[in-house]
Image 1 (cartoon, rainbow, N blue to C red):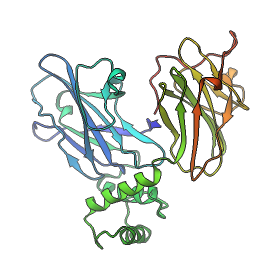
Image 2: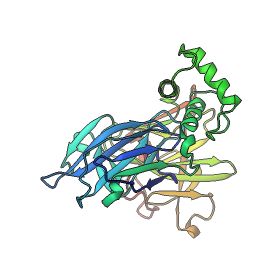
Image 3: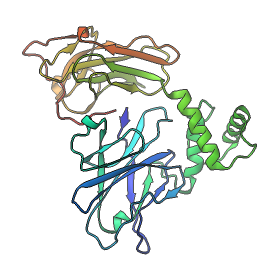
Image 4: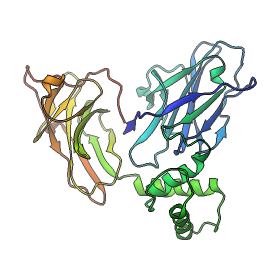
Length: 342
């Protein structure tokens, strides 16, 4: 699931003109950066991905004319190593991106080329020359240590707090990881971060709730669960026929979540078998509480419990037989044009 959290793209003006954008990562996540720009033919070219470790600065290109009025287009995402879903930094301009390294120009129909749409930020003037990625904790110079801690935790080691402060617990976890993987006793920090990322990806690749669309058209999915003391529903994840999405990105010990789904084409069938009522809205939403949905501007739907997890993973494949046609007066479903969550 792609999470647009309260992360910030902080624009810092450079002290002197530069000819390539300088991207600095002061978050606790390894990020991948994609950039877009206007070509001589007035098309938009987009390239990705440039990998930036926590605490690093890179120049992903392209070469920029400081005197030009043309904007630079910027999008970044965390890698898939982390529990809790992929984090994003960007804006409202939808452009095409690939799952792996890519370069596209003048593409309007992303889906036909197997590309995804993501929201890019528009950087103008001197703002195009240096960007610093931060998160609410504002780690600054502690970003590398915080990034190491987060990867240790997501790789299964006992790290209780990601604070960027090197303590005994972090030191012990690093020693345990180094011994388990055969790394040098004191590996360079970039080498350690890369090894931790690989271990976290291997551990977490399939953890959580994975929903697949085995119908002949597109479907939209909403999720209901209890977070702490609060019942919450959120949506929508949109899946084309044959597609899958990891709706929950964490190890599951119980089937303590429920889903609602609709076909988004002309059929508009709704998922059968729902037993628990949650509130939802036709566009992207997060609805806390399960009572008085209509009075709070929501519709109400019955969500189906997910399958029991096996080794931390619950899988659900939805076919045409899982859906039924709604009554004409039933509550509204998800808006067809809404941007997907992934």
